[in-house]
Length: 267
Image (tube, rainbow, N blue to C red; front, side, top):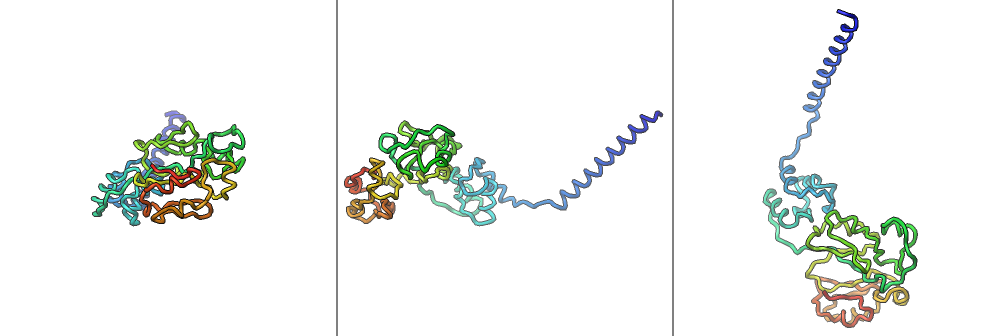
């Protein structure tokens, strides 16, 4: 037997021995450090849609399942799965849940190009956040929708698109109410609203009335006419902005008719 052959045989023997030793160590480690999983967590996780969108407030569907089973999170924590998934999870967890009305993103601004003053033409990264790094807003109103589609990019379900007036349009048939678009908006323009909520203030500005009128034709000026006219005291003007208590509102339309700026809408 040649010296080279002997070296090869010894080398292979050493490698085989190392592989066996490492394999034995891995088997031993897997038994020593094995993490026992709760089968109920796995079952709940299998019922979740697997979108991992973060709309539930957790890192993903697996984390959501753990929170439901181990930490007492609501069985309807998943906005994507909705009532159907919550009902299935409830059956596994021994809990009952009643169907609640679904909420969708709602755009609280109407100061588009036709109504709100434009300060400058933005040429750069198509991102509302990027534009805000250059200036408080590309428009005269610093509270309004910037219109560069950051919310659209945040939606992984293609439920949002940019309309001709520069505002996001929500497709309720595709929307899962995960809330990612709401979280992505740097100006807080998007908010959840239920279909039963018919009256909305389409403005987010807290500027004084004269300042609002100087830059926007349809912004709330905090005149309090709506507050005084509401027969059920469902509107309160705070810091120059009207807010509607949807629990009190009867959708009578009085506030819509009296608003001089047409900042309130009845849908």
